[in-house]
Image 1 (cartoon, rainbow, N blue to C red):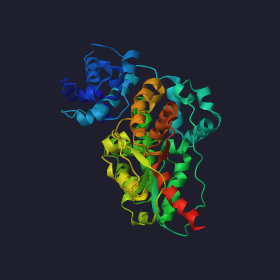
Image 2: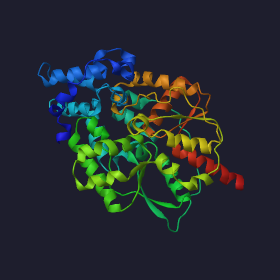
Image 3: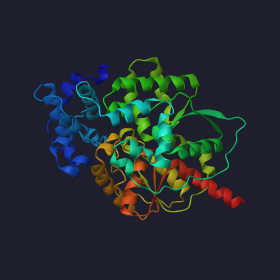
Image 4: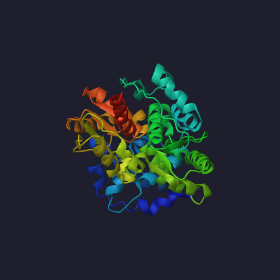
Length: 404
């Protein structure tokens, strides 16, 4: 695919004037102070690789992968260098010369591209801790006490307007309760949720291993599945999945007819903010704050919609964090390969959230939830973490109880 041919970006890479703007905002650089992990450093390494000054090596691969994909560098770069696409292209070029670790090949290429496997793996992790025994990854050994899922009587629809939903791997495997919350919210608003049976991973984990071809295959499977479903709107409750569909699918699929489907995708908060029926949802009790997922706020500029919903349902009991846009440090495979560094990055966000005095942190990304839960557990701050969908539904369920 031409969009991920590293040589294509030689002129873009040369635009880096080494100004250092990226070093002041890069979460990884701020923790390590290593030049090679900044966007400036990575552009220098990739340029040297393209010029044949350095060869493919495990050290080069490690340095280029020390990135949380927060896209802050892209947002701040005065020359508009597409750092993320250049990195994906570099990872692809290195994959042709270096072997992929077996655990990463299994976890991010084999498992996430097989229907049903992510859910099975998630069940194994949630119930038996089994994945930490199978995969030698420190992040899987974390011990976080999870709240029990909400219990509620499902609203039944005789008929309703159809709306598509793309769950993504994190919801499908680690947080299946979010799926039930979204389904119930839609039902109360009069929508029937449609989830095609043959959906697979959005493709970002495969792109992160350098397997752009597999990511393209996944994108085609997902787009064709929703094309056949014939729905006008497709909602996702995962910031990472949505940014992948909106920003990466046009590059992966290029002029493929199936690409047209990506324009139907919306974040849950975008959809709910425009729903008049949401005004009938009662207020939730407690004091809340919100964390902006990087892929949602920075890449897609979706910031006000979730706040609008939270302020409406929380009756004004909302406290804005001074640094709500701090990266949580998850970064997909970054968390698995650099767990301690990942949690150090997260600690700054946890402190900012704790300083609000809020009891509960709300976010729109299950990956951020996973990371913040871990960070809060390590800090013993005692805060709750919930997805926006749970927050919206929790208020409605409280009202159901009051009516009895």
